[in-house]
Length: 153
Image (cartoon, rainbow, N blue to C red; front, side, top):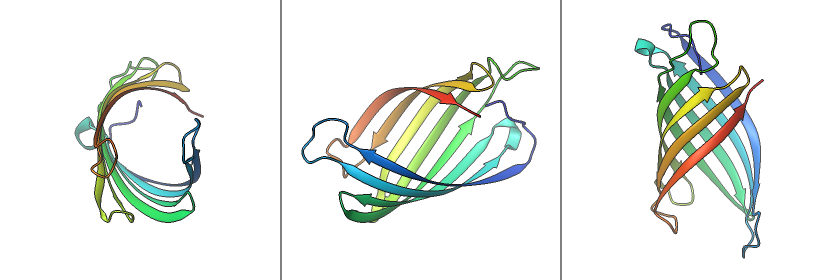
């Protein structure tokens, strides 16, 4: 959100674990354990913050091991009041592509366009449109609208 627009570059590493499972009675049930490592580079050229995130997922899906590499570029422009980030509006666009071991091809491609607004120092609302093209999925082209509530420390 309301970030400085100087010409600095930032690097932020990240690591985590995700457990994903079926929440409905589907047959077969879905069970995924995922280790995630990522590195994000942020630059602020011409008052247009750019983030380039590369990540590696080590996945165990229903007992079968696979991996996936993803890269996401995000470009945004924040407009905020002079003294406070509250009320800041940040339109953004993102493109993410992935390469995974199961198919050994670039897949899927995900485009996102959205608008974030900072309600308080710790609460952000994100409204977005997502288009995903995945030639290996049962639904090759999917469009979705998103509403995300982000709580920060």
